[in-house]
Length: 148
Image 1: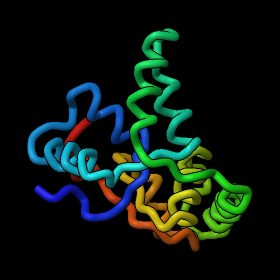
Image 2 (image 1 turned 90 degrees about the horizontal axis):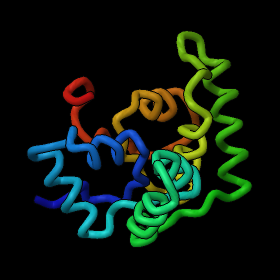
Image 3 (image 1 turned 30 degrees about the vertical axis):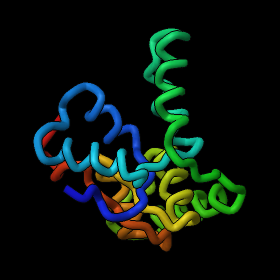
């Protein structure tokens, strides 16, 4: 097992399915290998999403410590501006919706700025990748529709 063979920001959609046991089998082994190999990254928007699930300060501290072990990409002013531009591109594209989650736009913009992909279980990233100028690999943690 070789992980994903690329550096990826972890979206909360992949993180949550891993933590709660919904991600299993080969997909889980691939995730664990990528984690061990240092392929998985965070950024401020992913940290905010993943830490939001903490039920109390003890759980917050535990999740935070786990995530601190990963590499981190910065949310720059340039990335934030790219996210806003991407939202405008989606709004201007016939048949595409600009109504993707704002945090997903920020994560995609950080990924594009830092030359990373996004590991997710969320169709928003495919829409962002396909219909905006943000260039990043959109990588599903498991095939779409196989877990939930």
